[in-house]
Image 1 (cartoon, rainbow, N blue to C red):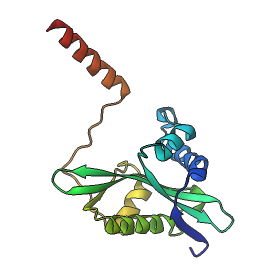
Image 2: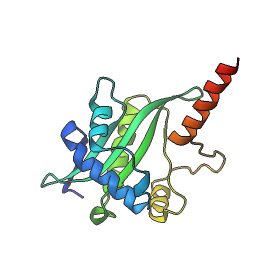
Image 3: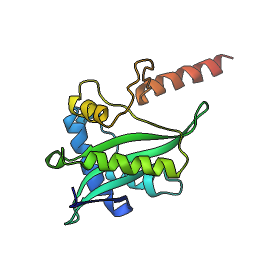
Length: 168
C-alpha cells in the first residue's frame, strides 16, 4: 500500500477518473445508463460553481487507480452531510487497502469540514463492496428506501405541470 498516494483530485485527473467511472458502469452491467462524459465532469467539477470534489489514488508511476467522488449536501435534521457518489478502485488494484485509504481521506475531510454524516449507496448484490463496508464499520440502513426520478420521469412530470398550469 505504500506505493499508492492519495491526494485531492485536479482537473487533469478527469479523463482517468472518468475511465474508472466507465469501468464501474461495466462492472455494474449499466454501461447504457452512463449519460455523462469526461468533458461534462470537467465542466461540472471545475466550472464557475463546482458540483463535486474527489480524491484520487495514484501509483508511484502516476497512474490513477482509484477515486472517491463526493459532494457536500445539507440535511435539515443533521446539517452538513457528505454524499459519496462513487468509491472506485480499478480491478487490478483491489484488495490492497486502497479503498480503505480513500475512505480514510474522506472521513478526515468530513471531520475537518464539520460534516455531520457521510452517506452513499451500494448495490445489494455487490458482495465485495458490502463486505468491505461491513469491515470498516459502516451502518447499513434497512429503514430508508432510495427514491429517484430519472430524466424521462422528470419530463413526464414537467409535461403534466405545464398541462395543469394551462388548464387553470
